[in-house]
Image 1 (cartoon, rainbow, N blue to C red):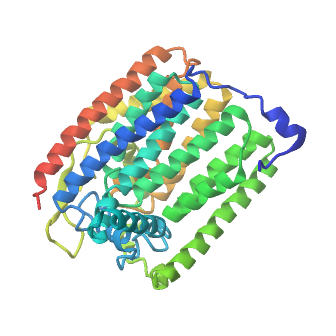
Image 2 (image 1 turned 90 degrees about the horizontal axis):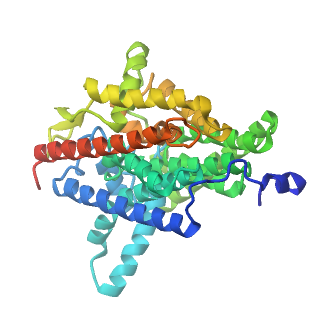
Length: 440
């Protein structure tokens, strides 16, 4: 049921800015499914390559990603003994959401074709990140179409989203980040639907996305609250009402997340994982002066980083690799200038945009500001957290592609061109990384 009713809801059914992509619903759905299929195939192939080189056997090898802990959780349903694994205070329900369906799928397949369920669960676990990234790609495409971008140019934008290095890499790693990426893509789609129709839709959908996001990473509660507040204000045009509804949804999402986490952790016999000490306090140290500069650089590297280099691995386990990849403290002037120019151009282009586009960009800016503030105090390798802001970073580029923008034709080709450059950069970076990883 919608949170509104009566004449107010009837009046809201008239779209404020109906989509003008010109594509039929069937064409949209087909395009979204094909985009998801292509994205899954690409990321799954990269995941197989990385797994064959044993890069998922240790934590921290891939930009400090905890792949080993999360993979263990996906396959076996355990926490991996980590305070930052898939069943912890930081990531309360990642393992709880992934392992049960993997167990059911593996058991069902092996009951038909007579196979060993344990190795099959490992293979299915390698497909988890690609599957969630495929969902993210479909929602990003649908968001662009909802904003009135023609289908072929929406596909170009989805290509930029897929080619951004953060997506390209973390969409292939068993971790929490691809789940966050999918959750944010769904959140922005719900927000965009509200902005273009003034109809908030089902409260259950919003709370469901909130439960998913908070269950993946607890700090996702703040961006969810920001988007929920904006959506309810846009629908009701009253700040007090918007804050009340947003607070209710956010509280419900947090409460349901806690209930599911405790209940499922008890089923798995791992309640103690939720009380493990957060041992990596080295990451909680204010370095405000440095981060004021580092975060904007990290934003550009989300899309187009320099080729990764290596550093000594931050782990007591040195086998099979004694190094980890990083782009921290690296700088490429032309890459930074290219992405920064696109961001600045998109910001300038907001002046002539319709209200719903400016509203979307405002939410994106607020989420970026939250991440910038949080990472003044937390995090070493900022690339590691880039899935928490990538969608918010890229969606404003749609302003360059919108017909309301006077130079939209140039903007569309610029976005497509950046996607091509990012794809080339991804390929070269991956080849460089695979060359440094010894096949197992």
